[in-house]
Image (tube, rainbow, N blue to C red):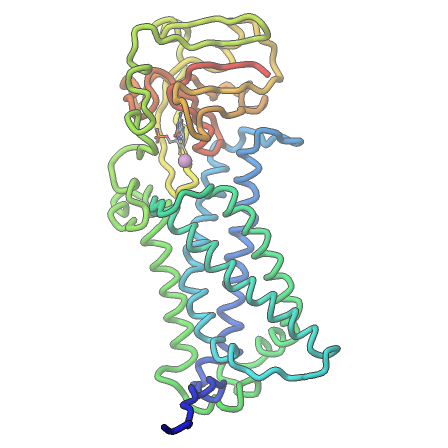
Length: 390
Ligand SMILES: Nc1nc2c(c(=O)[nH]1)N[C@H]1C(S)=C(S)[C@@H](COP(=O)(O)O)O[C@H]1N2
Ligand SMILES: [Mo]
């Protein structure tokens, strides 16, 4: 028997001869990727804060469309980042095989750290965008707490991104100062022009980002007629306000349609129980306000109901307090939410009984739901059972 061993050739940077895989392309795509990640991070933090049960400085109810806009920016920036990240990874891929420059530990440590940061950045960014897109597409393949993972990972990705940017800043500046076809910063093996020009590659990348945004987002879902293009946002394709979770899905049909239904309003030890007819007998107000969901859609509705503030006045509750809203729904994170004082006391915050002139449908929260301006969709509790002043 021959003792000869076959060796898999070691991949090397030299395998990649195209000039398209260059710092010139990676940097230009990276700038936009950085902008998208920055926007998504800031708007994500705003969204997280807006949903927090404890807010040292409460956000206010003005402007009514504020959360809707920050949420749209978040989803647009996140979806645009997907094709940008793919092109970016493609353009830097050969660097995975570059030789270690130094064997001396003192010189190796910074290189190791930088590569570790890039490893974290790449893995984190792929995961973060991946689960974000899955959430928009309402494809819950695994049972995990999306909000917590997406939020925690955002800090990891932004941290690694800042390290990466810090390390690369000199290169970024020199590359951006030169022409896109400049070859000075190229790998020595990158000598072939590639199948299209760098400019054409970049233009195709921007186009891909634009198409992804149109095909997937909130804006696509809410601009009339464009809804059909919202391939990633199935709920936006239906007419009217999408339904996030149906009454049947959360098992509230019996409780919501029962003749015994009462909405409890709790102030200290005093509990007032109101039937739907009693809520309807109080003075009614109508406001057009959006629902903006973190799953990437938003839609306006014209809501009619009792002002939450008027209801609290009716039972003698003082102003300036947050309230906890509880749903008939027995499980899930949407069962209890905290509505902060500026929202509670705003005249547009409603215990809504009607939508677009019709009795609220069971799936939109019958017998009564919360609607408040500049609020995340998750705080617009459906099937209210209890309102407790905190
Ligand atoms: N009780 C309850 N309220 C809820 C929810 C829920 O699952 N249960 N979903 C929330 C979310 S995430 C959104 S975006 C809105 C959607 O309201 P809609 O289904 O009427 O469009 O309801 C909110 N209120
Ligand atoms: Mo939502």
